Amino acid sequence: MADIVAQPFAFPLRRHAVALVVIDMQRDFAEAGGFGASLGNDVARVGKIVPDVKRLIEGFREAGLPVIHTMECHRPDLSDLPPAKRDRGNPSLRIGDEGPMGRILIAGEPGTAILAELAPIDGEIVIEKPGKGAFYATPLGEILKQRGISQLVFAGVTTEVCVQTTMREANDRGYECLLVEEATESYFPQFKAAAIEMIRAQGAIVGWTAHLDDLLEGIACA
Ligand code: C5J
Image (cartoon, rainbow, N blue to C red; front, side):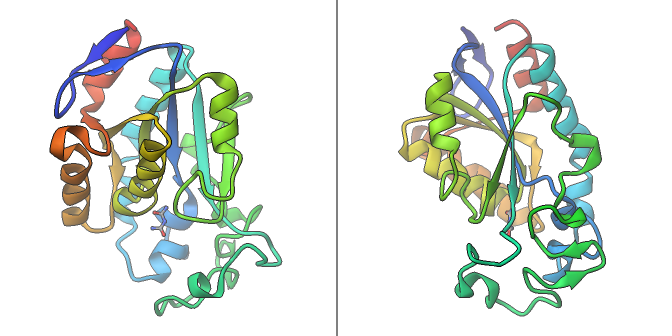
């Protein structure tokens, strides 16, 4: 066991129980012409965390700990896309529309892929999810149960949408959750700050937060 320096108090990391979950580091959320940009967001903010997400992933790989990647995406026939999701807002391109990187957020399209720098390697689990939370309509819960995982370290985008939703789902299912501050981002800096505060408030009501260097130091000696 290693006590990771974290907020609101130290996180008791157990090496046989922990996995990293990297949420939706996809071209569609990070590059011009993708879904994030079609909603009018400054996607360059996502690109800036890539080196820190990479350090985190490499830290887990070097420590021999599991890495799980998620991708927000839908079937080509859109059968898993509720009209309420497709029709929401006023994006220049809707989910399923043809964009400069292929069909927006559709499984197998170039824009839906995980950023090349953070691409999964052989043996790593990739969860395709139609919702914001990674447990909804996916095998994630079963996979974690089979592997005896009870602690989840989180990274990815966006902090207050898919990351926070998944952390709340995990927390309700009994997982101990920790978010790495430098390895997550929002299109709205104030939402990132607020989500981090919410997660660790009231004695870690949703989970812990930690800085990247503290987490890396902890897993190296766990
Ligand atoms: C969004 C996500 N923001 N991955 N997805 O629609 O947070």
